[in-house]
Image 1 (cartoon, helix red, strand yellow):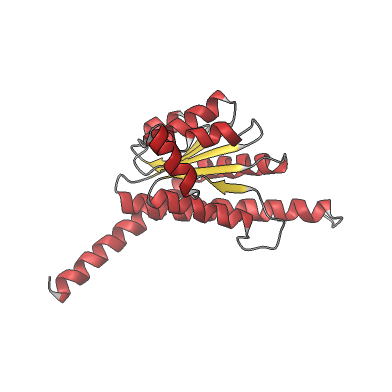
Image 2 (cartoon, rainbow, N blue to C red):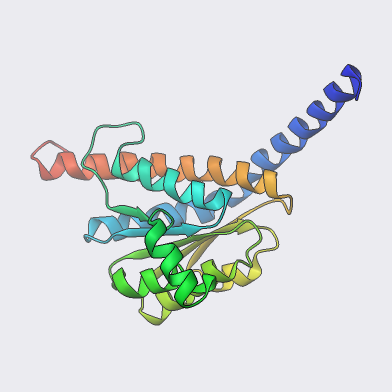
Length: 203
């Protein structure tokens, strides 16, 4: 590929990415509801459990780190666990049962009605993520989904869902990262304020 062709391809991809990111504006209502739900869960002492496969597994771990560490502000650590990190658990369940059970059995083991299970799937059709949300709903646990614009199956299992305005996996993943950073900022600010008030500062 010539230099001009490479440049043209990069410009086209960047323009496409910018279009998708800009369209997130149309889903700020969904992101507001997600941020509110996460704050409610954390405020009542709940834990966030996140799951996904491949790049979505990386997103689950990234988001859990933003909550247990910090995003932008100093505050107490917030309980968030990625169900993608224990290789012994994942391989044992996949070997003894089926890969589709790797998150669902962890949800069944750990989640309670004050918690939240978050499923991330660009396609919206990942069986392991869908089963995790199904089990969460059977336990009366709040469910949140992150998917693309064809992820109706995952959205149907989610109390709140962000559907990235694209069907192209790289664009969906990019939109998910931006959306999560927006949500993290709201949660970060609100939970920091709540922590400061509980420690005696003026609201």
